[in-house]
Length: 249
Ligand SMILES: [Mg+2]
Image 1 (cartoon, rainbow, N blue to C red):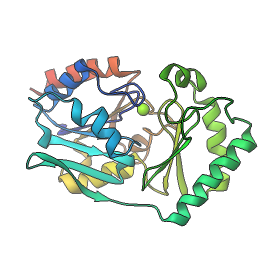
Image 2 (image 1 turned 45 degrees about the horizontal axis):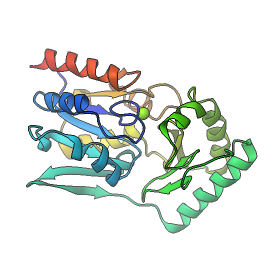
Image 3 (image 1 turned 30 degrees about the horizontal axis):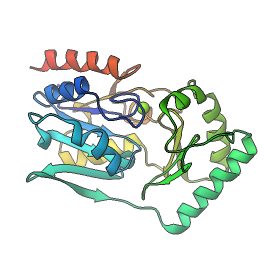
Image 4 (image 1 turned 45 degrees about the vertical axis):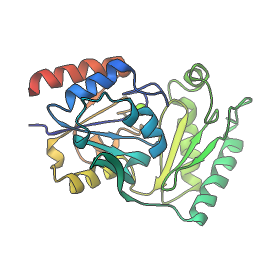
């Protein structure tokens, strides 16, 4: 019996960095009537607030919602009418500089330095550094064309691994690569959630669009053996949620 359904965000609940659409927000509200829900993604809290927290309808039971920014190195819950951090783990200044230098060296070495970019390429999220190949403000259409089959990022990822031993390097949204402390991935995040929520991992179901080797949704399946459903896009996710709600109520 599943008690908690955990989701990736970008590509699963919403298009890259876009707010949840109305039909998805209603779907999540339905799901919250039959299960606890977690959203775990590389984005930081402000992004979660914009994409998820502020989008849910008034009827949504927010006290059953667990939001895990920066791949679960932070946990936010809704108590007494407001969102608050339960915990947050951060990188040191030295670790941060090493990572950013490695990104720049890796882009030069692989030849994947894009000709045009929109905004900063590197985003410092405290406990995670995220590299967006085309920049943080790149239009969705441009991002979709850049690396739809993850081919470029697999090469950059392999190069980065040689430069950043001891750090976890995973492909994220449409153009991004997430760097965290070794051992920090969605498996780690969901283990933390199990501790803080008192739900056993066996009662979790995990849903994501990147459940394949090298994808940032793969660790919960590979390391924890969680029951997982791989979805193609948010439309696909809505169908999966409808099935879960019908079976659980
Ligand atoms: Mg995704």
